[in-house]
Image (cartoon, rainbow, N blue to C red):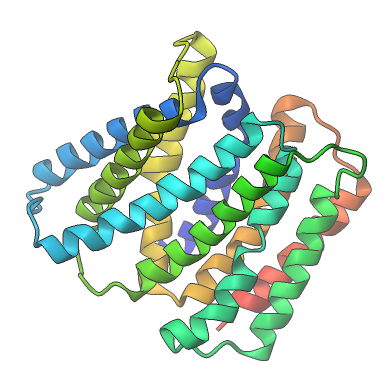
Length: 282
């Protein structure tokens, strides 16, 4: 079952790109994320209590998980949602975020003392080339400066969040850790709303369906799997599977939304798959 986790993660995480646009079309991005992570935090709290995990932990362990959530659920997801809401092409945003494994590989050595082999670097390069072929560069699209900045912030946030999470040694049960992380994300977005924005949510049928998908399948499902993979594997190997997400998202958009899938996309998916295999094999 554990060997299936990377596959499940890719499917669930990639599906989030299908429902992000309907959410921000019906809400302020930060209000939507605050709402999402309030429910997620409460859900993990209920699960932790039901599983008889100790939810009151030391201040150090709480802050470690809380700050990880601020980086991941706050800066990363907030940056992605905000950039798309400001007109950033989804493909370009995803491609920029896909640089994460390269940054993680570059930093995992000095920060985590992990050895990154030449074959892992080769896999990372192939993965990035394949992802670029799938996404294309959307030449001619207008890229808003604020959207580009937000996407770069998201890239840095998910990179440092992954390294931070791997460096932690608090050994908290996953439900408790996830609860604290979701709480960090929720409070981050509430502060953004309080200081900068006028929140609104249109609880339309489309919003409810899309948000339910991101809460239950992405936050409860994919994120839990990701935290497990980070704990059990090296950071550099874990994030290499992210290169499969743009390609998988493209296939999902073709299947569910009738978007075009070109021969170049198929070639890119093949190159990405080879790259991920090389980067993650033992």
